Length: 336
Ligand SMILES: [Fe+2]
Image (cartoon, rainbow, N blue to C red):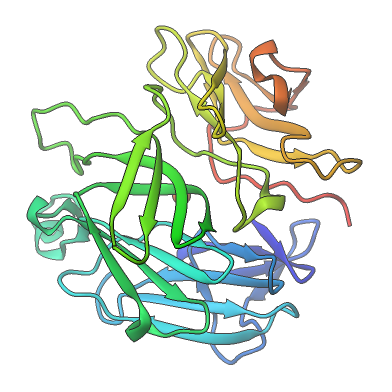
């Protein structure tokens, strides 16, 4: 669920989006002032430079496989950018918006309906020789204006944030070296980790490094920095002997410092969201919030950390009246 131009929306990449009220009553399909329902993947990006919203959806059967849509500051559709891609329909789960560009990750994850008809996973990790590529398109451009930059095969489900630094597009995201859809491989799947990547738009060179050896997914940041340089990232992670995400991690991109806090082995920590301190504009001044499920007691808590002191543990735990299933993709909207 997101809010743009005072409009509350529920998103589903495979179906039209719905407009709802602030008290969760359904209004109807969201057309963004146009004649057609607007599908939008769960990952949309606000563009603070223009006050716009940028959405992406993908077609799992036919070209154009990917559609970008720009929604203006009043919530009306401004532009649709169809993007045809070679090969099979591809899963493009997330994307990025910087000050002047939109950036896409075309990874080796395809939809294979022939395999699905034989009872296998419709998703497959395609031939590694294809590799991955990042496409960078000026915001006012079209598909023909996309500059593609090749790299080794890998997949990023979720980007933290992206920004421009001189001639580079810089971003962080959770990196999967490969994925075993359908569980058909005997090889263990490499766990995801937080990867920093820089694309030199002049030379097409791509450099990257993992921030640490922690396993993590569903990272977030102080979204007042949408499309701008970001120093702090927060993500669920595994602490100690647990097999799932039982802790929270903060990474400082200025010095690479990682701090963590872990709960018990049987606790599950969901995707966090950053709630800024309304009295401060400084990045990291606020709270990291997440639902934590305790399997032993079957209770869920909304847990808050001081964003700058994750390692000190929660500053607040609010017992939920009922169990909240482990989940992801949460957002924080102050009461208007
Ligand atoms: Fe997602």
